[in-house]
Amino acid sequence: MYDGVMPTQSDLRAQVTRLNLVLDEHIQLIQEAILDKDVRFAKKNIRQAREDIGVLSIQIGKMQRAIRMLHSLMRDRATSEDELLDILLTMKTAETLIMRSAFDESALQLERLIEHLLANSAALNPFIFFQFWMGIEARWEANSDQGQLLVRIENTSDVVLPGFNIKAPVPPNWRVLPDAQPVDRLQPGESMDLVFVITPSAMAAIREFGAPGSLQEKLSVQTGYDLRPDGLQMTCRVENASDEVMNDVLLAPWIPPGWSCKSWPFFRHLAPKSVEISTLDLELKK
Image (cartoon, rainbow, N blue to C red; front, side, top):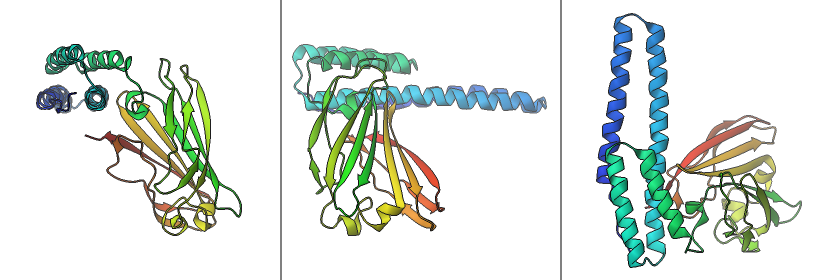
């Protein structure tokens, strides 16, 4: 069992070096264009710089997530001596690739190792090791404390999504039936719908957003979770179904296990009958 911390100092040094090289190259081209009074060429280079940095950011995100996935896998399951040797050799190769700024290839090396280790693993957190989209929405029965939690899972990857169990994504102390449900093995593009019966905690109607009551009748919230190779993105869609303006609406949506959120969706102004969307990037817990 390995419970160490993956090396990150060299990762960060290589990232900074690569970013500086990209920025220096574009800054030089932009300066030359400005001196030559070629505004169109300067704008083109600024646009290209943004695109290059965006691609580089995705590559680094994939590499960082792969390292965190490997760390979680080694922490949560027993590791044999042969597997530990494979891990150490792969990490050494990945570190060499990182120093060459080959972030995509480094992430690919780690992902292949993770797939090999996952072949002999079970009951691991699907929100860390798989790639899929999940949407949730609560619908409440009239004149009842009970409601239905609608959950959709869609395989957004280009490989088969293995089957797994998912616990109902509800706040603590809520009652839910069933507590968990199995998600079938899904081919790329396939989806599956689940329904949970939910009952809020005794104090939820008073202190928690999303419980049945007057606010729920006026405000509709749908939350989506997009697990991608470079991380997890959460999107909240809020609809003000009332005829009144709502100000300073703060949401505290469910966060998948293994992830954390530095801030919460906040809507300063919701006009009557309006729809607003907030998108946040979540972070893997260390």
